[in-house]
Image (cartoon, rainbow, N blue to C red):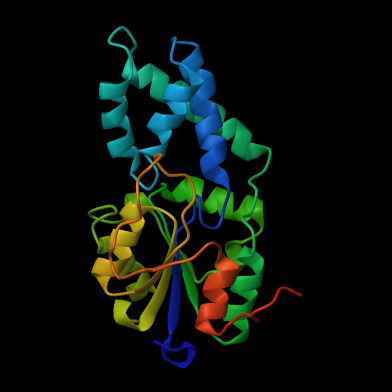
Length: 226
């Protein structure tokens, strides 16, 4: 698919647009330390959560935490600490603005497709100064099934008035990449936090080092940084 054939762009949020996964991981490490879980164990566990929904994350906590720990209380404490970090600011990932401006200059409408719930997603995007780039947001509490189901990406394309096959999708996680490719999107995967030693899946996606490389491949950005 060439730039001229792309009619819409769909973006994951956490770990792709925003460097928020590291904030979330840092909050987990801090709360986990209070119940006797080491930093190494907490970070390794967090890497398995990237791209999952809140419901799936809570279910996995049940198996990860020591039996004496109340999962609901732990989850609440973790998310409360994370929200306090987000309130102080959310870092934008490298080359995000370049790619968003490039796509906008070519008249490509854009939508965020995230597993994060709507209120938090909107807050993060506003805080990071990115919300105005997007026609809308498809959040995890707005769809019948979350990633890796293709439903979120199908909904994102529909929000733009398009078919998924007319859209390019940008993801960091394997879960999200599977959702985007199954929906029929041309998909670029920019890996962020990953379990050690786990190779990228072969889903027909383009794996790139950063969003600048994705933009160059699409013909939106120049081959050299300026």
